[in-house]
Image (cartoon, rainbow, N blue to C red; front, side, top):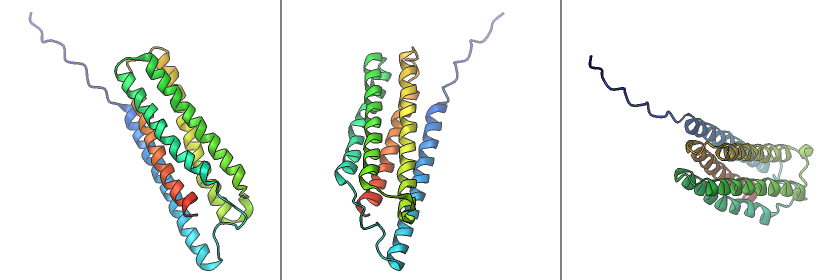
Length: 192
């Protein structure tokens, strides 16, 4: 009896990459909405009360600019991890992912330093509430990315070298977080 050959295995559905894209788009929309509220309340406060930012608050511009610059090596390391993972280079992929995690720690450290230097009090009004809501949400997104990067690193080191999709997902997430911070930097720290 003659039989037909078995069918080719189905193509991977790329669930992790699609899920990361949805989470990244949601984070961009969340922060976009929060930044729109910031601009609306800032304009309303300036029109009715006076200055938006409390007079005694100074933005440490060096730290906030460094946070923006940190994204450049972070993106390079994330893309390096993707490049190494696609070539089954476990050592370089692990190194690149570890350096990506270190850059995320630098971001968190810089944000905490900014909070301490600015000394904004939450009870200082709309500025304090919105400042901590926006920067706190951003920090939570960075912490989520750090956790995602660490899980990916451990997973890759544990022998899942054939799973390149998760490494690409980490890189996609960090690109979205960098896009978010660029707008946060411009609206919250530069235009004040």
